[in-house]
Length: 178
Image (cartoon, rainbow, N blue to C red):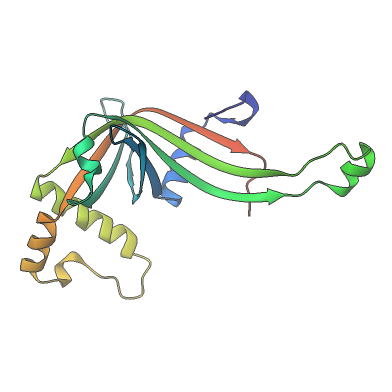
């Protein structure tokens, strides 16, 4: 990502907050011939004693992305964005030497992809994700609401993925868009 110094986000908490608020990330991998992108809801796990934070998600077993385990990958999280027309006053003051632009906030996370097929890990992950995303609902759904045999079948149909964060960079261009 082109990242002029004036747009670099230095606050790790601000970048973590953007990931949490805009959890649908774009995971960029390589299929051997071309780049590929999958749009996945991620969970951000803060750094532990080892110092590395994590991104976690799950994919359908039919999705080939999990077979790219070991690859260096990029996950992109886009926050608010807005078109910014030229300021009329500035246009008058500069003799028209103004252009429109875009204001946006974005976070890029780099790391190595790992696939997780452990059913206990997947079930714990699904419970945590469901609790998190269902919490604001008037009648939250729970994994326990579905028949156990159905959940067992679903667990066989998914694979967990995890990215140990090696580098994280944020670009805050312009004011926070509304």
